[in-house]
Length: 103
Image 1 (cartoon, one colour):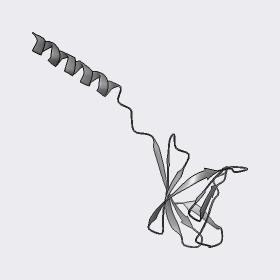
Image 2 (cartoon, rainbow, N blue to C red):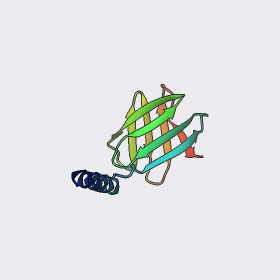
Image 3 (spheres, rainbow, N blue to C red):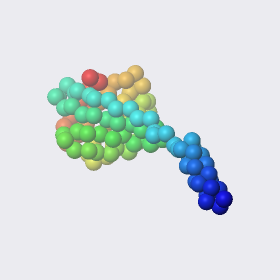
Image 4 (cartoon, rainbow, N blue to C red):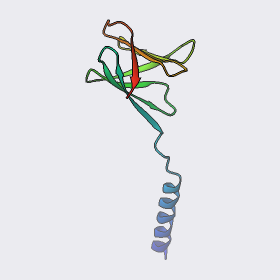
């Protein structure tokens, strides 16, 4: 009978564990094309204030910075600005600020 109780307990624990399993964080990915020909992908995850970029074939993580309006992220010589109205600009590799649009 002890073996039967152990099996029932194990099945119960597995069932409770699968019910309480945390769902994957929601994520948003956008692909941008800029006026100077730059193209990049940016990813945002719920619960994370950083922006994750794939630009010039390299992954870059940008920290969220203080912005007057909209959102601004920077790091590794890259600054990404997303205005409240959706206007997006990027500055990287000592290039001038360039307007970008979602494709």
